[in-house]
Length: 109
Image (cartoon, rainbow, N blue to C red; front, side, top):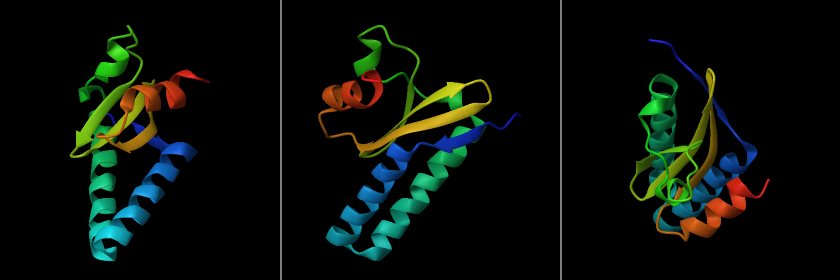
């Protein structure tokens, strides 16, 4: 099986850092570290099976199928596969207003 390169954009890296800081503040450093381990595992799976993810429903409703997502409750990882690379664009709490967040981060280039 062919492995893809997984590249985390600066914006997604900030998302991960913000999530880590929030969880550390709310639930402690141990929980925050466990969450980082889960994120790493998700990114590792993207290297192996990137096309397994679904198209985000908010984008699919607009006819946009360039992006995919994988979830680990309550978080969503939004990414794009281009040739042999997976670009992680967003790592967010799925309970947020995804419509405006996706529009702001992905569609307003």
